[in-house]
Image (cartoon, rainbow, N blue to C red; front, side, top):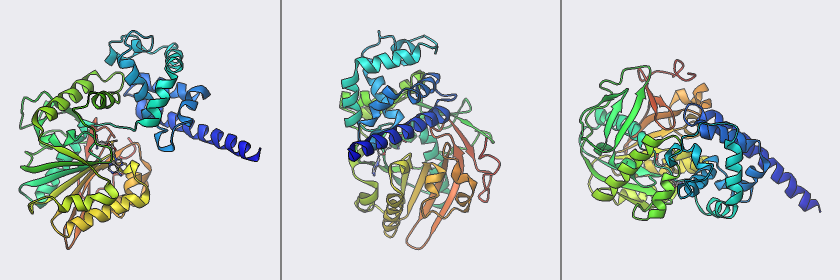
Length: 387
Ligand SMILES: C[S@@+](CC[C@H](N)C(=O)[O-])C[C@H]1O[C@@H](n2cnc3c(N)ncnc32)[C@H](O)[C@@H]1O
């Protein structure tokens, strides 16, 4: 009896945690990005039956993005449903109104078993191509220190679409940046606190492109592609086209591959197997939130081990609070900046056998919809952290 009561209390506490998580999701991600998800996250936070959908799945699967993706996947083949009418990516035109949450709730009820299966078996899989802006800015910084060709490895690469960053066109503040490839994939980003002109330089030659992921996405598998597309938000028609363009390009060129591996245990070994002696740029974007504090530092130790053999530059786009828990040597992270986890920091950590140099390069929205370059290397981010 005591056990049953403890279990009930445990579930109630977990439901409260999830409620807060959905409210945070609504405030941090919905605002200005997705009126549909903003309203739905508030709706889920206020509905015990909807929250219960996540209570029966493993801890690490209890994420708002996973619930919304699972529903989105099912909606893609049910475009005549009442709920799909609110999703422009599924051809819907209906504005958010007081029937949205009831339509979501009814849809979840009708497809409860399919949802439960998806939520317990699938994990978050996104590939946010706009984060290539952070990669380009990081590689420009690396070039200033180590000019010449580099190898590129992304850890937590998902489908590996960021590895083709130099095959895409970039539009900063609406202006096309050079060189232009007339690519079907256009990456757009607003530049804040500065002008977009000249912030991207011509990328160096990339000698090889390799991704590492615990669960790589096989783009030849239609189910895997559909799951990746399910993470596109309801209003993001343009992002869906960009993602599909990048998938087609990656499938057609086969220029990059993604191997199965764990950031914490496999990074140094995989880097040691790369031929050549040119510097390796290791890119991570939105990886650290998947690692425990210990695993984050184990990953950095792996980079340091690899750097004993050849120069390694870690270019990151990650949340400040998570970076602050690592051994990175960045004084600004010891201050209030570490509280701003709804922003990402873009930076680089250059390492070789003798030394390392860590530097922040700018602040960004987690999806790189905007980027604010740091004016100079001693900047403490006081001016831009609270906007
Ligand atoms: C949010 S996605 C980001 C994907 C990509 N970096 C981007 O910005 O679009 C995080 C990725 O990290 C992978 N991942 C999580 N933990 C990992 C680990 N310990 N080692 C390697 N990859 C991991 C996940 O499988 C997922 O593909």
